[in-house]
Each structure stands twice: as structure tokens, then as C-alpha cells.
Image (cartoon, rainbow, N blue to C red; front, side, top):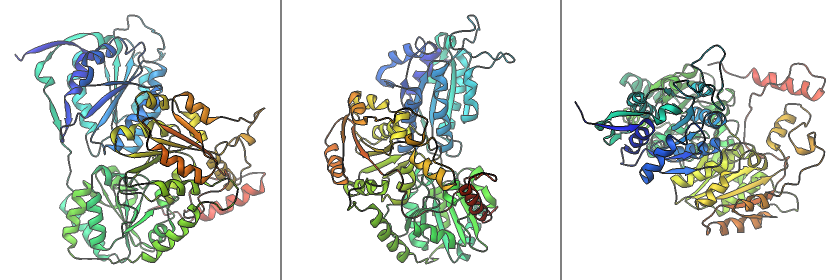
Length: 608
């Protein structure tokens, strides 16, 4: 019989996690974010304290935003590293459900370890326990099932022998990657078991690169040879596959322009000759013109989200074909595409070899140059005394950006404006736009900085998102994690207010001035951020913003710069239609007019 070691289940879990490494020898689960309560403080808390720096524990302020920081860390690490997050039972656990959904949509690894009720049911019902009147096996953690790639409830200590390897397999799998939830019954955490010693031997998890079937590669090469106006849509998987250079070589060698999804933006530097920028609803004029005219759309590790496709009104050329290179079969088969199911780097190189010297020679230099002139104009510093637009704020940050600048955002006006206008160096863009979760921003910026300490991280956040979740700013101060947050204060949810009016609705419940409040709030964001320990100040002009951005780089704590902005002006350039259903019946003439326009655009949608 093999040697054994007697450990509690919690001690076994953290010891096992501490010796799991990626192919480069880095600990895969870099650490554990924890807010302790009943359900994890006695079991996991004791185990994490004992293991110390071999699996470090970090304290956050909110379970959801701790998980956001972990997700941003994994995204910035190109899924080669991840973090775990543990909570108590009840509200501590359910606070993480939103983050699990965010990770699921974005195909990002995170290990969620919520405490659970007693497996032995002796003290039932315990504090915060949800009781299902029809199913005694259900707890609140069953909420994680639809938003987890792998879910398991640990009801006996020995179940870790199978559950933990399964969890790692999912988090390191190129196609199945996503959130894992190990719902850990609180009595089981403290129970001991004689675990095999060899279970805790260090293990390396290589980055697997599934290769596509040869027939699919030949089909792809044939389609590309026959196409006269192909375009490549670069998705986030290009970055996770580390296929940036392969994409650059492929596009250049074969004369095919590249357009970018939100997740794929910065796979190529903005000034790469074949890069036409963002595509779709928040796309550039150049990218959308080429996409509309393309007879072959080549998706590379993209989900073809509605923003990318203009709700499937963008790729309108007669006889247009769709080719989808994707490691996940689910995505490769979408919309009747010719599939190439395999790793992006391997697939691009293999198809390129089959194509040889073939070049489509799609010319788009004039389109790109015209777009640069157009975007220069909307990002230029204002001449008058009015409030600056979001585009002008982006221009100010752009003028101060360096090769190590990474801009990030998640919700509101700025994601669309940044996708349209921002000019990143390679790797200089981080957008959570799969779930577009308000409140991701500050925690996410902290996670980026943890993964890339050398980066100049700039977080764009509106006043609405800041009010949703800001408390991890205090965590960043305590841990001396510096990044710059630019709060654009437009006094409400201005982005959705513009959408509301654009669909014929009356301004209602988005801007404070249109909400049922007795007093218009005058929120002092500078004082609020400073109270958490950040260096906070107000900029009263674009010029002052630029100076404060320079100063922020010299600090070892987060900097917050607040600027009042124009709530009414959108990006001012680029874009395409987005399907937002307009009521068929309304007493408002504006709604009826918007419905007529809506029906015209909806008729342009392609089903395949």
C-alpha cells in the first residue's frame, strides 16, 4: 500500500492546489481571495493560514469584486494562471454568482470555493441556509450550476481525489475553459482522511494545442483561394492561444485585412498595416466597410457576438461565406460556418502552409487613413468651454499613453468608444464585454496590475459603474497596487439614456435629473476615493487631465482622476446597427418612428 498522510479535507485541498503548475513552472492557482465567515473560516481558514506563502491568501472587500480581480488576472495571464476565491455560505456565496457568469461568458478560468451546509445535516437549518421544500440535496450553491463549466459538491473528504483533478482539467482546457465551482460542505472541510502521499506530488499542466482535421484545413485553404475580398475577424482566443504573431504573419503574407472584436483588440498593434480596428456596432468606418464588402468572413477564435456582427446585418455581400477557426466545436459550427476546429496558432500556420504564396491583396490603406483622420478629429482637445466628450477624454489618455499602457473598462459608454477609437500597442487593451458587467472595472484593474506589474494600467469608469462597486480601491491601497482610474462623471447612466432616446423612449430613470429623487445628488467622488486611501483629484479640463495622468505614474498607490463630461454626445464616428427591440405599439410618436426604422434594419438580418 502507498504511504498516506492524514489531513483535513481543507488542508488537502490547499496543499494539492499549491503544487499544480503550468508548463512554464508557475503555480497555476496563484493564490486565494478570501472573505471568511461561517462555512469557511474554521476549515479553509485554518488550512490557508497554515500553508502560508505556498498558496497566499488575500483579503478583499466584496466576494463579487474579489472574483472580478481574479478573472482579470486570468485574462491578462492569457489563461496560463488563475486564482481561487472562497466565501461563506449564503450571501457570501451568491455574491459570486455574477462573477461566475462573467467568467463563463468570457471562457476564463477561476476556482470558486463557496462554503456549503453541513453534509451530515446535524444542525440543519444552519444560519443563512436556503431550504428547498421539495429537494433535501439542494443548497444555495446550486445557483452556480448553470454558470460553471464544472460543478461539484464536496460531501466526503475523499471526493477531492477526483474533484480536484477534474477542476484543473477544465480550467486548463483550451475549449472547455471556464469557472469551476467546488461547493465545500463546512463540516467536511474539517474532517480528516488518510490521503495517498503521491496525490500531493507536483504536477505540470501543459498548454494543449488541439490540431484541426486535415480535411478541414484543406477546405479552409480552398475557400480562401477562391475569395476575392476576404476579411479576418480576430477574437479573444487569438490572444489566449498566443497566436498574435501567427495572425500577423498570416494576414501580411496572404493580403487579408484584420478587424477586431472587443476581446481580440490589441492582438495586433493598432498601426499594423493589415489592422483596420474594431468591427461591428462599435467598429471603425474602415473595418465595417471592408466587413460589409467581404465575400469570405474568416473568424479566428471569436463567438460572433451581436456587437461584432452588427446583429448579423454587417456581412452583407452577395454569396458571402463564413469560415470559423475555433478550438471549441460549439463556436466553430455557428451560423452554418465551414468549421476548422483546432488551436488558432496551429490552424493559422497549417492553413498558411497550404496557401503558399497565395495573396488576396485586399487594399484598404485609403480606408484606414481616412479613419485615422476622422478619429483624430473627434479625439482632439476641445476648443470651447463646454464639457468634454468621452472621445476627447480618450484622446487625452491616448496622447499620454506609452508602449506599456493597458486601458481597461467593462460597461457604459467607454467600452464602445474605446473599441472604436483607442489605438493600443500589442496587448494594450483589456475589455470585459462578454458580460459587460458594471463594477468589474476597479477590481479588474487591480487584477491586471497583479498579472502585469510593469504595465501602466488605466481604468476608464463612469460614475454609474463606480457607484456599483468601488471598494476594492481600498484593497489596492492596502496592498500598494498602483493604477490610474479616470472617472467620467456624467451624472447618471448616460449611455443607456442615449439608447433609450434612440429607440424613441422618453428620458426616464437613467439620468438623475430624470429619476424620482427629491434632491439631485452632488457626489464628491474625489473625497470618496481619498477616504479609501487613494490619491484623488479633480481635473477641470482636458489639459489638466493630461498632466495628472503623467503625475499618476510616479505613485505606488492607486490614483483617481475625476472629470465632468458631456452626457449627450456619443462617440461621434464609426458604428453600425444594433438590434434592440422597439415596442410595436406605443402612444409616443417617437417610438412609432423608431419601430419603423427598426423593422427596416431587422429585415436586413441574415439568418445564416
